[in-house]
Image (cartoon, rainbow, N blue to C red; front, top):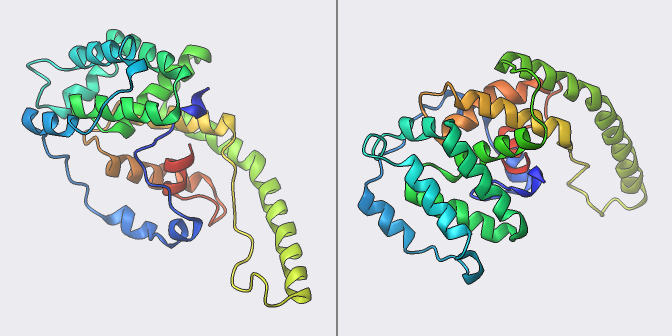
Length: 254
C-alpha cells in the first residue's frame, strides 16, 4: 500500500514540539539552494550503508540500474536536471519497479534503500519517496484526466471540509470528558487537554501526494526546505479552522 512507503528521513516529533514550531518564521525564511555534492562526498556517504544479504539479488541491481539512468555527464553536478530525469518514462518505470520489489521488505530496509539511492545520485530521500509514492498511486489508481495544481487543491479542500466538522465535534466531546475528569480528579492530567488530531485518511493523503508531485514539476529549487514551505503556504491553509494541521504533520504522516 502507498501508506507503507514512509518519509523515513524525517525525525518524528511529539505533538508539543510540532505545535511549538513557528510557521510564520518558516514562511519568511530564505530558501537556500542545496549545495552541489561532489562524487567524492557521495562515495564517503555510501560507506555507512550496507544492504542485507537478501537484497543483493534483486534490490541492489535495481538501485544500480536506476542510478545509472539518472546520472550522466550532463546531470552529475546539476540537481535540477537530475530531478527532471525522475519524470522521464524510463526512469519512472525503473523507480516503480524498485518500489514494487520493496513491497515484501521491512520499512527499515526500504528506508535504507532510499538512503543509498539518495547518496548515489545526490537527490534527497524525501523527493525520491514523494515521486515514488505518486508513481505507485498512478499505477493502481490512475487519473482519468490530468489535473492542474489548483484543481487538485480545490478537490483536496472539499475532502477536508467534508470531514473537518466531524473531527471538531469529536474534539469538543473529548474536551467535555476531560473537563469532567478534572472536576473529579483535579490533579490528574492537570496541564494537558485533548489535542486536535486530524486523521489524514486515504483520499486526503492521495490528494496531498498528487499536489506535491505536481509542484515538483515546476519547482526551480528542489530541497526539503522549499517543499516544506510549499506545504505550509499552499496545503496547510486548506484547513480553514486554525490549529488542525501543520506542515510538519503533513511531512511526517502523509
